[in-house]
Image (cartoon, rainbow, N blue to C red; front, side, top):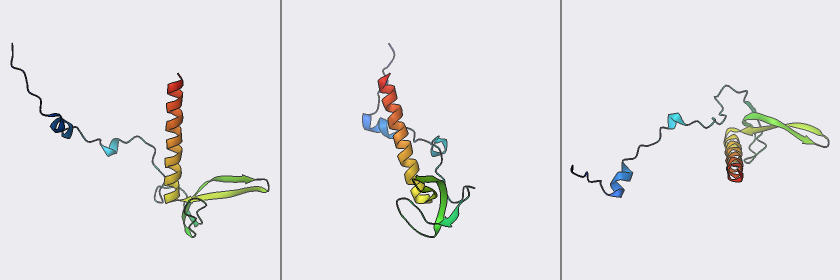
Length: 99
């Protein structure tokens, strides 16, 4: 019989795992002020409520009186994207469990 190869201790084996390549990240990119979208200077309607900052149109807010244009800054767009992606992952997970 051939000689048996000795494995290093578990802690050493874990340290040699490859690090994920961030350039292979397949998540959709969050809008940013230099991405080619139509950013304007205005007020952020979301979390930060800052005024006179670079904002991107998100969509309309519908009220009984009519609709208004809603804008979000880059920081709040990141928060919105994170929350939406989290909700989508949770929904997908529930659908897999239900099968």
